[in-house]
Image 1 (cartoon, rainbow, N blue to C red):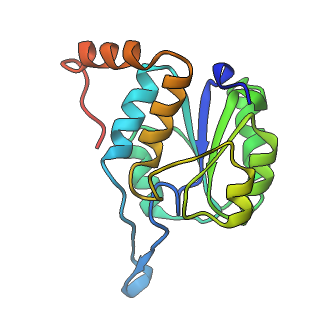
Image 2 (image 1 turned 90 degrees about the vertical axis):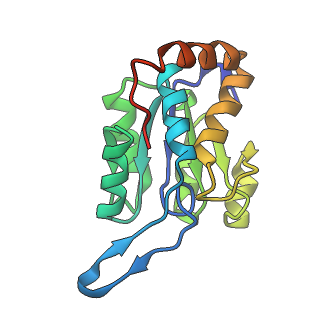
Length: 178
């Protein structure tokens, strides 16, 4: 693990940014519960110049809406083979795999976790996923995992105070992501 090399955070959505629940209504209407804490995480990541991307095995309009709200441009949905999406992102963003943190919770996340520099898991992940992780968050999926991981990275890199100070200095210019 080379946390000082990290330039990007890629993550699963269901079970990481949500608790994994999907509410389905008539006409396939779908709802998911996200937390504003991950909006704070995106603001911190942007201030720290960390790139963000979603890689999901499912296609979901709720995920697309949340990505737009958080201004996350790199969203790959419907990728059961998440390595394919990872390789696209690495090439598109000119990154090497060791420069990436990946947050996962399910079995289909393992191949990506094996490839990146810093695999991270949530505590309610599959046991094999937790075994792969170099860091297991205190927050469960849907409870602010992204914010926690961004803070962890910045603290490991010795940049947390500097990034928070920069965020506070720029807060009057920015509209807080929700």
